[in-house]
Image (tube, rainbow, N blue to C red):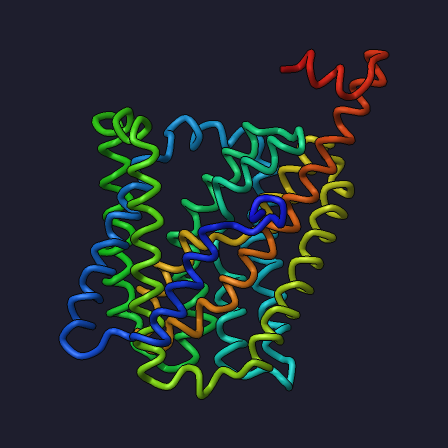
Length: 336
């Protein structure tokens, strides 16, 4: 039933962590232990990201530079501009506006971007490179954008933030990538274990973040109207970037396969990177409110892009079937 509705089970688990933190938030000494475990989870998460990144993907990424530049421009220029514009809306709560702006500063997703590109019969190799580049660049670009556009404006010290980013994000990532020749093959074989560690660490960060936010009175500041506003703004934001990527791809003269890469890689924001980054870049009581828009947007992008990918895939199969002089179902059977 969840698959038919395009609802990600993982999103339900994340919402479960929010509900649990709202009812049973971790407090006192237990919150210190939970925070240390969440920090350790972030380190492990970025170590794994580094070990997963293929060096060949980095080298291949430079070859199709126009496409990757377009994806990067959508991710780190157009999205932040839209986020700043949303912040000017007079009816938007300041914490909600900050969360939406943070959402727009994040890198693209990897797994879902590649999966939807494949489903839509796009350029999968280019999607792998673009998504990998976006995540790699995000380790450097997102903290800088957050410092310039969010935390820097609040007058917070940047020295501690830089040190935290270096030790919790950058060093584990580099260490994992350097050790890829040794552990890369083992990690590739342990997909189920890696997924549990990946998702489990994010669930822990979400629980500790929302616990701290609830203790600080999150739900007294965020109303049901704010939640409805987040949903509406996220839907409009997604519609805008999907339309802009479609127009930009045609304007740049990309092939159909490359336009699909631009649309699916350039319109997404990564929950897997965003949650741990928020835990590092913001004060603990702020994190819960900051990642709320990201959770809404993540589910919306999965649902909408799944529908688009299926439609693009059917259209591509129909075109090839017509060219081959057979029906679509017969063509799919031949392809399989």
